[in-house]
Length: 609
Image (tube, rainbow, N blue to C red; front, side, top):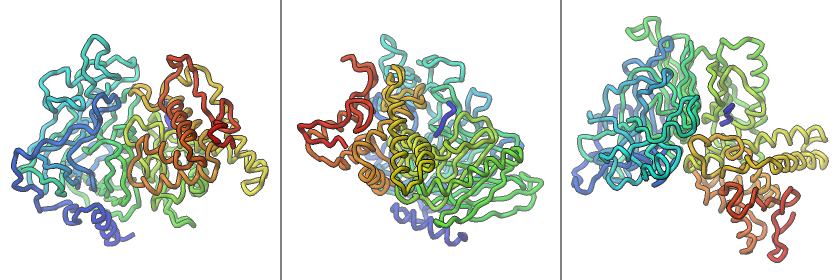
């Protein structure tokens, strides 16, 4: 994210293959699955699935994520009236999941209402598990690890806060149950100690679901989708527009238009069946499989059209795209075999559309350039959608990058396209790992500047061009390293909801660390590490220890002292807020040829170049 703050039968075969690889019978993935996964398991051996995937003491959206199952595939059956921004009867999702324990009940994330006038106002009309009606209710989240369980009667166990403990020292000593939802005028801690909204959709099937069983959950709902108020005062989710809705949702706004397991590591595959007013265009992740014109009916007196989009690669919860509006949509198959989609809102002026298109047409070149470092592009399609709502950020929606406000920038396109590898294919293991993928995307912007210098100096195949590329990155590092105290005051791996997307700790400081790693390992080894991470973790997620271990394996000197030095490098760059108790004001370890102490210990033989 960059904040300003086939034929049908072929697709069915692909979807069946994806489900088979996940250990799920394709028959269970159908939207009308009949076979029940419930069984005669003893009630004493079954329990409710956890209402969070966060650990005790987490402050970054601890209310999101759900335990007891893994997400396998999702069918979105949207029935949407663009004029009124309303989901109509028939609108529903079907989630195919696999139980990881015997489940007496389980939960989804769904913010159906909000005090924000631009927030959602939706109602669940029915829930079915494997085709059978199921009981459902909405509940407040409880702080992760609550020994009294999700129904703790103590109201202090259901409070919001930016930090741990709730309310600050001397008040409630419990961890937060959720992050506060701030309006733009609120201060960082204005809503500490307030009650969390009841955004947990708790579902109780007619009989427990056996451990290891695949099951389907169909949730029907109607009403108005909307935006989520984030912990930093910004908004994200479903932005209403005069001609429909524009979807850009990091970090948790997907639950403001659909129920789901709303956590980055929850990555099902998707099919979208979007029925919208005739003349409107629905744009989602993956590839457009077919469209169908429908006759007028009670819901759509002027007729409707259904779009089927399919993404056979897993999608993290905050990267699900499904915008509807007056978009001009084109596609082409490029020389590299990828399908590239380009969409712009028709209300954008012709001159601005032409300017946007000239940048959008460079996406294949950007993809080819970034592939030199990251390895093959991980998906079968890529694309850009330019909408008009004034969202405060652009976002790397998987294979369909969103640009708000009617404009697109070339440097930002480098940033968001880099995310297709970093964040989309290899997703962060939790919200506190946001810096990992934003740093890589920020690095792509610095690489764009370096590429420009390389071209001016003679081109990528020349010694002068290569020297200019390296010099540009080194100059960028040195400029960042010279920043004042505030640049180093927050540790990238320890954000609060209020600081999650702050520029220095989340974008620039980790990008500088990657430049230093580039210098420490050398281009060949640095590139090899990036591609190894993509191969090993692609389709899933990565934790900070796993990321650091991958770079450790790339060290040219595997001696204990060198490895210890690199461990300390990561501690200083990722995990330390400055100044420290010792008086240090910035990381001491940098890299060969860079401002700072450099990365070498002569006694250990760590290379200086």
